[in-house]
Length: 156
Image (cartoon, rainbow, N blue to C red; front, top):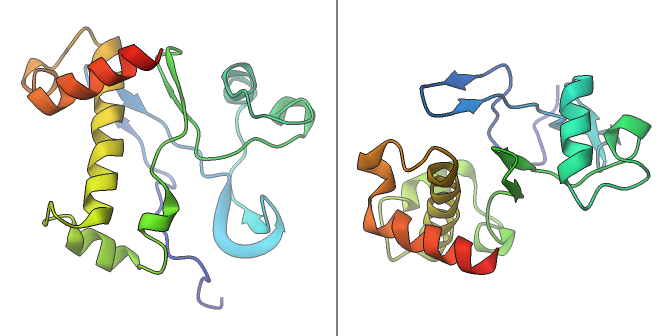
């Protein structure tokens, strides 16, 4: 297999479950060129229940969404059917960087890509705290998370 033209990481065949959150990723496509999924090769299929969930909550689905064979932008994240949206940050902050460069920069809070990724992470954590009734408290009561929860509430 030729090297990938896209630096990426994967959650393929992973899961995470705790008292507070379950994470069940579906990798719709590989990072290899192909004829589907925005020019990439397909990898996993959504279950009918997952397709219905995405179609219900993703306002950007086209042609009837996944259930009807249409398309939806990714990544898509559903946090308790309450906070629905896309994760991440403006890709321009990490364009041209490989995963090692991005990860290495995370230790330096002055790096622009780190600021952007930290903000996106804090917003997602704030959303999770919003549906878990602020549990675990050690995470959800962090002042940074509280600020992002307030920002998210103001935008709703």
